[in-house]
Length: 225
Image (cartoon, rainbow, N blue to C red; front, side, top):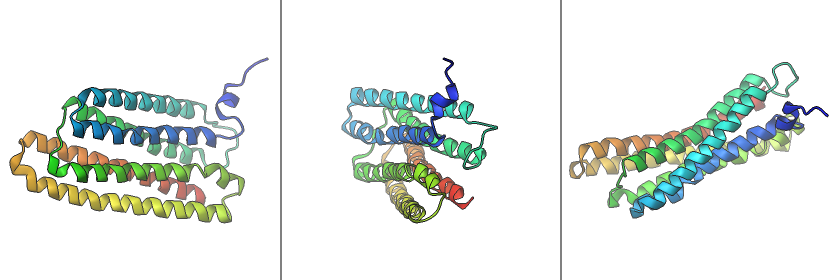
């Protein structure tokens, strides 16, 4: 019997693979928590192992993204515009890419976080990771949204999830301002090149939360169709 590759990939719905991809992207971001703990402890062997885990997860997310882009039907009926689903996949993928970039730069430079900045950086990263986890919770409801025709209580539930997502991203923005101010106060005590790369990491962590928020924004677009 001939095997339908599209059937294998999508089953009854194109939504499940998108949810799987978001789960993989969220795994990448979640792995940054123990990675930062290893960096703060100066345990570079553990940091390297965790960075390799993040890179593997990002590669798996990349494979899922490619399968989705190739396999997403062009001529068959889809419950939402194909272009919107492709945009959603792209935004989700940036979460995985961002986590990989953060871990790669910090490991490559063996970046030392000043002790006066350590607690703030940990809190800042944690909120960014929580924002990605909230984006996953919203995407997990996408199949239910389709089943209900984007109506009723399910829409209200997702709207609440997106509101909470926006609040988390806003909290992350506020923490970013505080972390940058603390680093500015320490600049005179640190090698200038270290300061430059610390600011870069701060920016990338903020971008991680921004990408998670944009997942929610794309979901809102789907609900508005």
